[in-house]
Length: 194
Length: 326
Ligand code: SF4
Image (cartoon, rainbow over all chains, first blue to last red; front, side):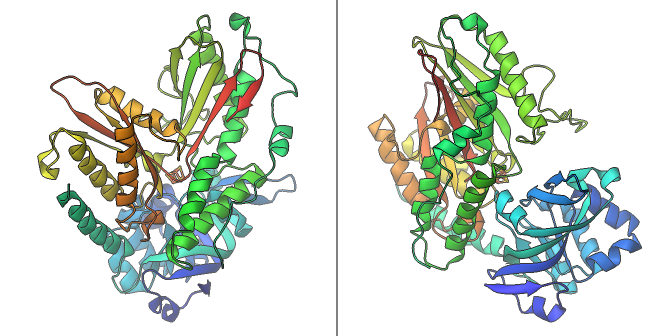
């Protein structure tokens, strides 16, 4: 398993191939539906330094607010990514994001942008909310909490050894497509037998 | 790394010491009208959200040990097992999606279903306020979330099925059914020409193979498939969920279906979808099938997909008043 840290250079991304398992370290910014729409429509400058060569995570976490004012993550597994398909390509290009974490994979438009920008789609284990929260070492900041509500806010976190699989790379490869094709062929074989 | 063994979970004593039920709490089943199910159901929810059933954990471990050492599939199953250990240890939700909440209440004559429903709803609202459950019930068209998991029409959510029966004790089963896996369920009407599926067990097999191939990893595989043969569109889907309450590894009472389940599990695990759809052997942990009667003109096959985070549990109130969680 490769360890990769933010800021991630284009070279590192180009070296990653579909199927690689990585442990991510460094800065991750959470964003879901409202955040993606906002990034595309408003393109705020204050997000630029936060997202540059960093990673976006499709996740609506369960968070705890402690008495001394600091935040921690209780459960933080991935949510389905395809909902951000209309926005993701634009976001990748505007902010030079190097990775998108989520589940289920994304479409053609995002795949093209991954190639153009030099970025990867990184799949997290669905249902592993407790473990993934444990790998969040620090909640650095949160933006638009009041406006968007907790599950949709931009949580800026630092992760340590966050386990991910590259399922879409910057060379047009998609593990989702490969597995879909081979499993469909096998299913046809099985269906042809009694 | 060598083959993995069962994760180290907190002892039953520790689980009990954290119970919301007072020690030595007893139910008085001689006074069904005065019975309050709120606290035992709250405890049922607490246990279900943070700990998977033993048979599911055992199935994950057994399948993990069949994957090639160091493969993506083995590593992903290891991640799941680590998650199981952490959630249990911290008493935190296994998955942030705590699902659609479904109950089955089996009770003797004399229990007021209306009152039991009120008590169960109260327990769900309280568990939501305690963050054991995520508020997962929104108004369909506006998307508005009342924040307490309650459908104000008193029928949609939480889902509560009642059945009066001969036996004196009360049994309440709970299932937390994730949204991602619910989305990949499917219903077929046989004959289904596109699959070449006729009205027999061979046709049912084709439907199941089709459903699981279409689902890929989207339902957070490895999944558990609940299948109902027959019924109508509603009762078929209902049964396809209820059948997932059966423990993995227990035989189907119908020997013909038992053989069918084993064969399907083996066949599906040659599709190569694997954990989370990354490829690998373990696509399902089990297939559970139930046969129903049907209208002569209709032949439905209903398939419910349960994710690996198969959260379900039974609460049993014995006639003696003692309470057990299984
Ligand atoms: S389908 Fe996946 S994300 Fe949804 S409840 Fe199950 S494990 Fe969690």
